[in-house]
Image (tube, rainbow, N blue to C red; front, side, top):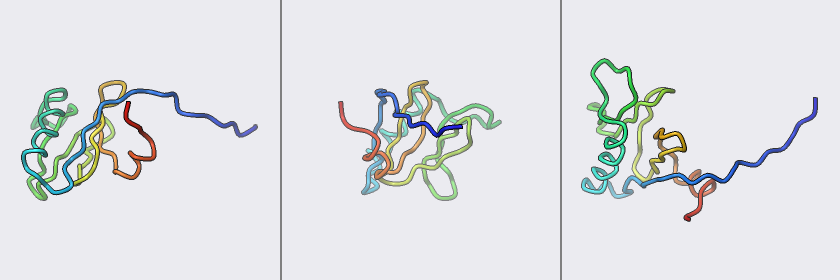
Length: 99
Protein backbone atom coordinates (compact mmCIF):
# COMPACT_ATOMS: atom_id res chain seq x y z
CA UNK A 1 0.00 0.00 0.00
CA UNK A 2 1.35 3.43 -0.96
CA UNK A 3 1.04 6.60 1.08
CA UNK A 4 -0.78 9.25 -0.93
CA UNK A 5 -0.86 13.01 -0.44
CA UNK A 6 -4.05 15.07 -0.35
CA UNK A 7 -4.94 18.73 -0.16
CA UNK A 8 -8.05 20.12 1.55
CA UNK A 9 -10.67 21.27 -0.90
CA UNK A 10 -11.18 25.01 -0.70
CA UNK A 11 -14.38 25.64 1.23
CA UNK A 12 -15.86 28.83 2.57
CA UNK A 13 -16.90 28.91 6.22
CA UNK A 14 -18.45 31.55 8.47
CA UNK A 15 -16.58 32.43 11.67
CA UNK A 16 -16.56 34.96 14.49
CA UNK A 17 -13.86 35.44 17.11
CA UNK A 18 -14.56 35.38 20.83
CA UNK A 19 -13.14 38.65 22.17
CA UNK A 20 -9.66 38.36 23.63
CA UNK A 21 -10.41 40.99 26.29
CA UNK A 22 -13.57 39.27 27.56
CA UNK A 23 -15.87 42.08 26.42
CA UNK A 24 -19.30 40.86 27.54
CA UNK A 25 -21.19 42.51 24.67
CA UNK A 26 -18.94 41.04 22.00
CA UNK A 27 -19.03 37.63 23.72
CA UNK A 28 -22.84 37.80 23.78
CA UNK A 29 -22.86 38.50 20.04
CA UNK A 30 -20.87 35.29 19.47
CA UNK A 31 -23.27 33.34 21.70
CA UNK A 32 -26.35 34.78 19.97
CA UNK A 33 -24.98 33.93 16.52
CA UNK A 34 -24.53 30.28 17.47
CA UNK A 35 -27.84 30.16 19.34
CA UNK A 36 -29.71 31.58 16.35
CA UNK A 37 -28.63 28.52 14.35
CA UNK A 38 -28.48 25.74 16.96
CA UNK A 39 -30.71 26.92 19.79
CA UNK A 40 -29.96 26.55 23.48
CA UNK A 41 -28.95 23.23 24.96
CA UNK A 42 -32.03 21.30 26.02
CA UNK A 43 -32.10 19.99 29.60
CA UNK A 44 -32.16 16.38 28.34
CA UNK A 45 -28.84 17.01 26.64
CA UNK A 46 -29.69 15.18 23.43
CA UNK A 47 -29.34 17.66 20.60
CA UNK A 48 -26.54 20.05 19.63
CA UNK A 49 -26.88 23.54 21.07
CA UNK A 50 -25.10 26.23 23.03
CA UNK A 51 -25.05 27.15 26.71
CA UNK A 52 -22.92 28.86 29.33
CA UNK A 53 -21.16 26.50 31.73
CA UNK A 54 -22.24 27.55 35.25
CA UNK A 55 -18.95 26.32 36.72
CA UNK A 56 -16.49 28.44 34.71
CA UNK A 57 -18.76 30.83 32.77
CA UNK A 58 -17.41 29.70 29.39
CA UNK A 59 -19.57 29.26 26.33
CA UNK A 60 -20.07 25.56 25.64
CA UNK A 61 -21.15 24.22 22.26
CA UNK A 62 -22.69 20.77 22.33
CA UNK A 63 -21.74 19.00 19.12
CA UNK A 64 -22.41 15.49 17.89
CA UNK A 65 -18.87 14.65 19.07
CA UNK A 66 -19.36 16.08 22.57
CA UNK A 67 -19.32 19.43 24.37
CA UNK A 68 -16.59 21.87 23.36
CA UNK A 69 -15.73 24.95 25.44
CA UNK A 70 -14.87 28.29 23.83
CA UNK A 71 -11.92 30.17 25.34
CA UNK A 72 -11.24 33.88 24.96
CA UNK A 73 -9.69 34.50 21.55
CA UNK A 74 -11.02 31.28 20.01
CA UNK A 75 -12.79 31.44 16.68
CA UNK A 76 -16.23 29.87 16.48
CA UNK A 77 -16.71 28.29 13.06
CA UNK A 78 -19.87 27.30 11.26
CA UNK A 79 -18.82 24.44 9.01
CA UNK A 80 -20.05 23.39 5.60
CA UNK A 81 -22.82 21.22 7.05
CA UNK A 82 -24.04 23.86 9.52
CA UNK A 83 -22.08 22.45 12.45
CA UNK A 84 -20.40 24.77 14.97
CA UNK A 85 -17.12 24.28 16.79
CA UNK A 86 -14.35 26.38 18.38
CA UNK A 87 -10.90 26.71 16.84
CA UNK A 88 -7.75 28.03 18.48
CA UNK A 89 -6.43 31.27 16.90
CA UNK A 90 -3.12 29.79 15.72
CA UNK A 91 -4.84 26.85 13.99
CA UNK A 92 -7.42 29.20 12.48
CA UNK A 93 -4.72 31.48 11.09
CA UNK A 94 -2.80 28.54 9.60
CA UNK A 95 -5.94 27.05 8.02
CA UNK A 96 -8.12 29.95 6.86
CA UNK A 97 -7.79 33.24 5.00
CA UNK A 98 -10.33 36.02 4.52
CA UNK A 99 -12.40 35.99 1.33
